[in-house]
Picture 1 (cartoon, rainbow, N blue to C red):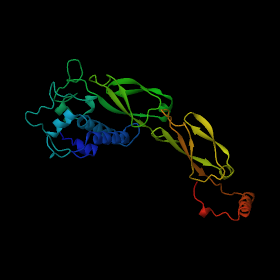
Picture 2 (spheres, one colour; picture 1 turned 45 degrees about the vertical axis):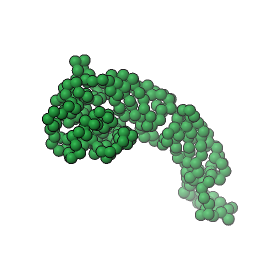
Picture 3 (spheres, rainbow, N blue to C red; picture 1 turned 120 degrees about the horizontal axis):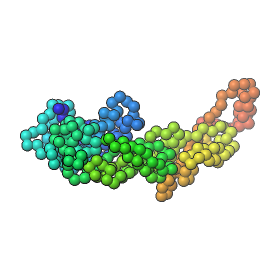
Picture 4 (cartoon, one colour; picture 1 turned 90 degrees about the vertical axis):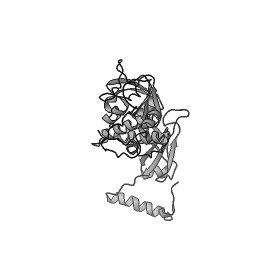
Amino acid sequence: MEYKDYYKILGVPRTASEAEIKRAYRKLAREFHPDRNQAKDAEDRFKAANEANEVLGDPKKRAAYDQLGPNWQNGQRFTPPPGWGGGGRGGMGGGAGGGDFSDFFSTLFGGAGGAGGGFDQGGGFGGPPRDQQASLSIALEDSYSGATRNISIGNRTLNVRIPKGVASGQTIRLPGQAPRGGDLLLDVTFSPHPLFKPEGRDLHMNLNVAPWEAALGKAVPVQTLGGTVELNLPPGTLSGRRLRLKGRGLPGSPDGDQFVTIQVQTPAPETDAQRQVYEQMQAQFPNFDPRTRGTS
């Protein structure tokens, strides 16, 4: 069987703190989650990160793993040393969905299909209950309104209630839903949205407007997660100006805001009459120099 360098998989040094390991795992889980990444190797890399976090995120497993020493190379042929005590019946047991873990993990810590035989007679992993982490990708609309979603963990389907206002990076805890009776911790990420970019509970978007809307200060329709509202443009609004719709972001205490960055779109003249309009504008604003104006 091949040795797994869990530190290399997560991209952290062997001296990494628990917080650094958690951040590295969350970053990889978001990047390679199959719901977000359709690359050929995304699912394998997602599973590898999950397995690495299962070991390095648990102080006891990490300490046992570190006993193997730092001199092994990823992929190198590996046999547990004589008297190895990290796996076997009644050992530390496996994590979520042992069948998704490698033979290397199962041999060291027990688990489905592994030589350690870490299952107890009740069909769960031996040892005390253990929490399990997983990634959950949701739509912004799920956070705005609240929702329920079915997710598959191992060979089970769970109905998850998504609370209103949950933000990317927060965790939804499902007590007692880990395979060994611990809590299932779902790290929330947002799936890409065609219009909005979230930052915490705030939402950011670009809005195209016509030159006359920006110049005259018109009220223009703006899409929000709660429906369409009107945004009053100040007269003389320039491209790049950012306006705020207070409380139109994700719900919370306080509610997030929606920030709208204005993009003035200038139509190209297609007829002589349209060209004359621009020439008349030029004549009406003889002192206007756009190269001396900054964004407001």
